[in-house]
Image 1 (cartoon, rainbow, N blue to C red):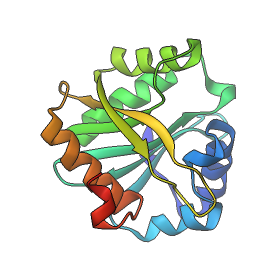
Image 2: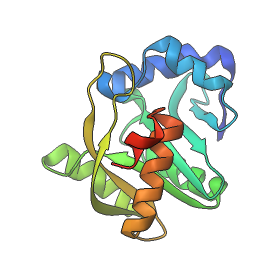
Image 3: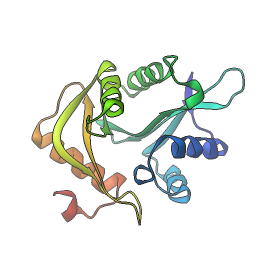
Image 4: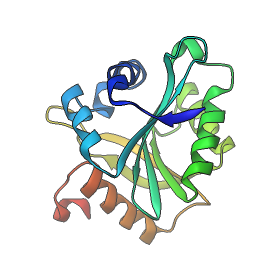
Length: 179
């Protein structure tokens, strides 16, 4: 069962984040933990029944009409048994509205498999050029694509969504978020 992360579980979640993402795609620990103060930011976890250890998490931002999944990871020990798909479907049902997430462009076997996973779980790949801004000082921007539930988005929706993500998630000044 997926539940809200308890504050004392953050070190486990951050460790899984470090294992699962390149440094350009997550903040340093203190910055990531500081997000817990933002009422729009939530982390849900799935624990192993036998040990209580966190085996997966979804970190998401609730923006009213949209939910943005910033991070989603399954522990290497728990992969391959369908847990990721089940957790994602449960999250989508709980969110009950459109969801957006970022993915690497499908250029090799791993990135194609990741995009395929999200497509099998109801997401659509949007082909508009998108760049994740630097997530923290010293981290470089990353070329990514947006995937959304409930169909592809229009260019106008993409522009509004990018501006929202840049402003709220990446703290990019308004003038720069329109580029």
